[in-house]
Image (cartoon, rainbow, N blue to C red; front, side, top):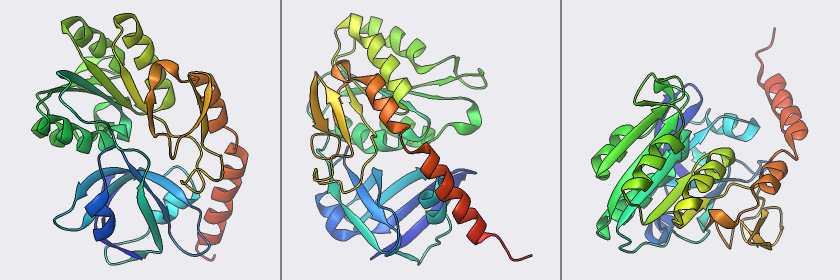
Length: 277
């Protein structure tokens, strides 16, 4: 059991929670994730770590309500308990002094970049963050990243804040100034085009993949991805991989495999939760 210590509604479809998990907080590193199960009949879902606080014995998660389980999770309040929180899982981000590092986040993908940014700064790197969203209202972790990084560049599709356009526009300009490493977290299509942008510059680009996952220990094989022509497991070999070697089309097609079942599960949940007429 893990008690919810803090909960915030960041925007209508995005929530932040902080959980009392002292054992996980003691061992967790930036770049890792946990798998949660709300109750005994619940689905297991992976969520990246948005922050780690060993002193308070807690971890922070940020998630979007896109399906049945994440919607159900959003109904829990401070003091409620989540039945299972398993972790830390996956390999942590490789942290050392690289030089000038660009972190690229799309939507709430900026949240798991936050602990990575803090670790990179502590290792002596110059850290530039490029964060993008469709509009100003959808930007997340802007203040946190500004307090941590040397520079934060914002892009919005509609130009409501920062540079009008997508993150690759700002990234291209930073690459011209000199970047030693890029780490990208966000929608698969965004990470794909980040890699296409960095490839001509021959800049190493790490991406955090989000394939369908069940057990998180490498046994089920559901999270398999193709990297460099080899089959890898997102849970134990990742979640971070060399983005220039990822088969993006295969990844995105596998992410769409269970849309019908996900829709049916959400419809059933909404029906059962609807107030009696």
